[in-house]
Every structure is written in C-alpha cells, then in structure tokens.
Amino acid sequence: MSSRIGIMSVLLAAQVLLVAGLMTRDALSGTSTAPDFVSFDPVIVDGLSVVAGEDSVRLTRDGEAWRLDDAYPADNARIGEVLEKLAGLSAPWPVATSADTAVRFEVADDNFQRRLTLSSDDEVLADILLGTSPGYRRVHARRSGTDEVYSVNLSNHELPADAGQWLDKGLLASTGDVTKLSREGEWTLAAAEGGWLIDTDSADDEAADKLVGRFEDLRVLDIAAPEGEWEAKSVFTVTDDRGDYRVAVFHDAQEDDYSFESERLEGRFTVATYVAEQMIVDRDTLLGTVNEGESADDTKGSNAGEEGIDADLLLDLADDLLVPDAS
Picture: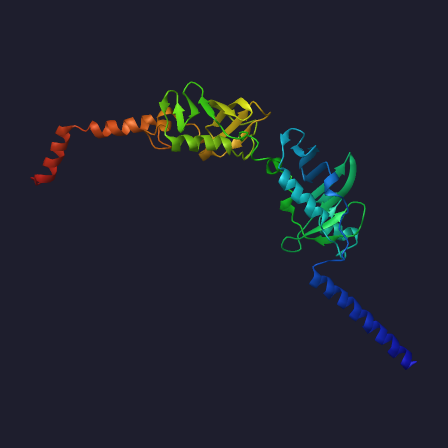
C-alpha cells in the first residue's frame, strides 16, 4: 500500500513539474496558452456601442471609415486600437463565478460601469460588461450570458461613453495645402511666387504661414453644445486641394468659447479659445505692422498715448519733484 502511495506521489510531482516547465517555456518564448476572453476578428467588426449609465455612443463603419452616431467622422486609429486590444484579451481563469460577485464587481446585467457590444452585419459578436478595477490597468469583466468574472488587461477610461472622445479631431482641417484664404469683408490672402500677397500688398510671410497652418492643422475639441449663446464672429473662405469652402466662427461671450462650422460637414464643433483668437486676425497683423494677438487699434491707442503727453504737465511734475514742500 505504501509503495502504491509513493508511486502516486511521484506521478503527481512529475505532473506539477511538467506544468511548471510548460509555463516557464511559454513565459520565456513570449507565448501564452491562456484562452481569449472573447473571440472575434477585428476586421469584420462594423459596429461598436458603449453604454455607461445614461450616456451612450454608437460607432459604425462604412467601408474603411468609422462614423459617430451615423453623423460625424470618428477616430479610425483609436477604434482600431481598441478592437485589437479587445480581441487580444486573455482570460486564464475566473476570479468569481456567482451572481453575487457579479453585482459586487459591477458586471451584472443591471449593474455595470461599461457595456460594450461588438457587431458585424447586425449580428452580435461580443457583449461585454466591465466593472470595478482590481489593480492598475485592469478591470473586472464578464461576457453576457455567462457567470464567470475575469480580471483582464483593460481600463474603463479606454472605452468612454462620451461622444466627443471618439470624434475625429481633425475633421475640420483642410484637405492638403491652403493656397488662398479670405476673411469676409476684411482681406484676401493668396499664395504668390516666393511668398504671400494680402490683397495687392506683400504679406508678412511668417504671419501668413502661421495663419494658414491653423486651417491646415485645425483640431476640434468636441461637438458644440446646442444651448450655447453662440454669436457669429467671422466667416472665412478657404481654398485647398478640393476647392473652395466656407468656415463660420461663432463665439459664446459668457463662456468665452469658440465653435466652428464648415459647409463640408454637418454640425458645429468647439475649438480651443487661444487657437480661434489667433485665427481671427486683422489686415495689419498679416502685413506685420502689429504683433500677433495685438490689434491695430491697440497699437494706435498706445502710440497716441505716448505722443499725446502734455509738455506743461511734465514741467509741473518736475517742479513738484524739485521744489521742497513749504509746509
């Protein structure tokens, strides 16, 4: 009997050593035998929705381009990275398997922090619930319809339910180089051989290049809130590789926010205040006669103040400094 127990002990030890050896080999070779958390091909995904409380976003793919809520261009690169990461999530073993723990980890059907649904041709490929975080860049996750809860290499902030964070931030940028730019009722800037012309005068090339670059690399922040007190500030006509298009600029004085509209795209989008203010420049700025951010009126007022100092006032001030106080 004792010899039989000894043989079984040896076999058990051998099995343990074999498993340990396989795990070590996988770690050294950089491979993993852990099963995938979800199984899908990122290439065929054409729908992604994210729900968090009362907030939700829906992303759909049309050909090679993704759109946000079937309206706005979405960030293709970000979506691609998210899909690749989801497809590569491993789930070696569950950390919980009961309904109670699903509620505690906030991955229950009626109590979750994020719900992700991936689809292809309206067929659901994966329905994932994300909850609390057990550690840095890790989150509890459960596949809908199963009891097992896993800790996966992901974080909730990578999957926001805020539409603006999925937006293509360069959606208002020009297509290629800007060769002509007009501010309605103010000036027209045009590329010429060796530099820029503003109307018929030579422009300051550095100021012109900086302004044109703002339109070529224009980045938006978010979709503009419709309830903002937006007032028309300026209108530009831009000429790029696709032709002419108009851009309208609006300002909310109460919040000091700026928003832009382009006739190439539906919707209005917020732009950083400091960027917008550097785009709404006057003719003298483009001629190089005033510093950027300083209007021609400011310069005139400053010079007028310097030239308009009264000579008699200067003499009176001098007397007050030189003559002792009689008291």
